[in-house]
Image: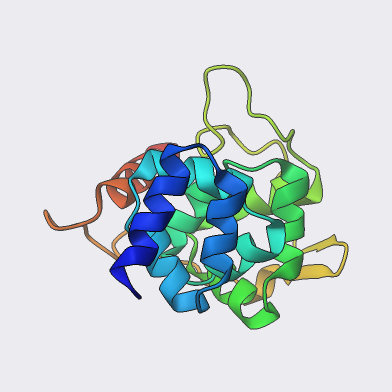
Length: 180
């Protein structure tokens, strides 16, 4: 990636020209676009992600770590969330679902199936809101189908954070473990 592309993207974002910034990302190959996106400050990432067309969001999400993708996806409406998942390559989508911790996976399945409201209760983030429906084995949303049997269950000791871990990951894991 050319340094002038990064500068151009920063300039577009600072001018509030999100549609133009999205088109600048679209011109790059998916890996380079995701790398450039991830180099942005977190607030800029959230603002730009909300403005991305769903097909571009689906392409970029597949290159993000699952925890970062999970947070960014929840900055979009439930309709956008469904559209993004439908536009993801099926193998990538299944890998994303498989990488999520059980509670986050269940929450996401409940959201896209319509079992949970699109907006969490006041004062509670989407990750913290309790599931309103107990587990189920299959979710069907449009062309999207996810089978509970494909879900890996990770033990609580499967991964231990280190002091070098991403702060965003640490926050998500803290919330998910607190909900257990």
